[in-house]
Amino acid sequence: MKPSIKRWATALGLISALSLCAPLTFAEDLVLLADTAPASGDNPLTKPDEFKKTGPWKIGMSHYGLSGSTHTYQTAHEAEQAIKDIPNIGQYLFRSADLSQSKQAADIEDLIAQKVDVLIVAPLTTTSASAGIEKARAAGIPVVVYLGKTSTDKFTTEIQGDDFFFGKVMADYLIKKNNGQGNIWLLRGVAGHPIDEDRYKGAMEAFKAAPGIKVISDQYANWSYDDAKRMCESLYLSNPQVDGVWSDGANMSLGCADALQQMGVSSLPPITGEAMNGWLRRWKTDGLQSIGPICPPGLSAAAVRAAVALLEGKQVHKHYVNRPAPITDETLDKYVRMDLSDAYWSPSEIPEAKLQSFYGSK
Image 1 (spheres, rainbow, N blue to C red):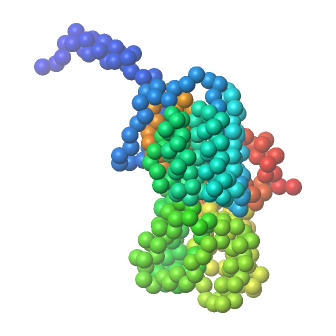
Image 2: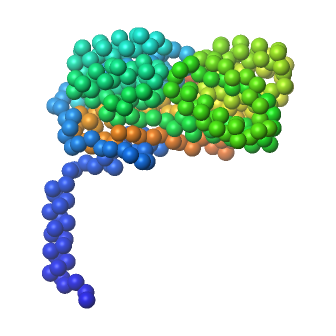
Image 3: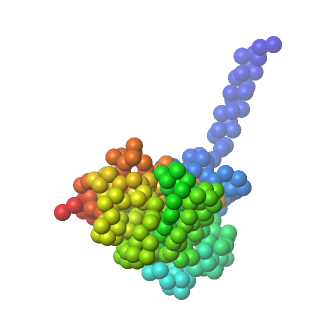
């Protein structure tokens, strides 16, 4: 039997009434950053208006440190741009821990004492910010974590790259390029940093499944060009038989490439990189063999947006994951910027005029 027009009208009226009663903004509508979505599995939502506050707001950010990779500086620029785009933010307090666990702990204590309305944290290690996060939550301050995991789950929400995927993609690439055989060097970031640890876990899962691959060096180069250059010079002198370099930071990739070329290596082995412009330009101009997983510096801007969403009373998921497709030979031209300096990281949300001011080639 077909429903009558009256029954359709009744149903439509009910739907309209429900729509009027529903919240105007759902968590699914929250756009934090491209290629970013709520994580699968157990992923609860905050309650509507749970952290809602009248502005202007005071936002505090504890960053693990503007040091080593230029990526850290661009994350600061991306966050600043996001802050400027939101008129209801009255004060923004930024603290750099300078790669010191004790300083990060002290920075968070200071931000709590400053009575920030929301705390944003990029942790140095899994434990460096945990006590501070728990103290902030006990004081009723919502906490947004990004660019690294913490040992505590008391934060309000987190926006993370899929660093296990990042590390595994690079390892899979080296395995394929070498037909499952060969000697591999591993250049790691900062010891104890959760991003490095997750990338390493992803890499080792792939390498362990390829018995013909031998990891003959596994060392920390601190996401630093100079440290990686010195390390690769030493490694090459001790054993020049290297078939691939797994580097979880593009500054290290550049340092290693320069070291090998200066040692007289005419044809570089495959070296993994990421979306740093210096590496992308070298990849393009020298025809290197590489792959570039992406860790967007805009994750900091995503953290700012999540913080603002909480203060606006919107519902926010506990976990968000950013997982862009890696850069390949086929997509390299989409990301490389020949008009910008090596220090630039792709992609960016910073307006073009500011990009040229910060990173324009002279």
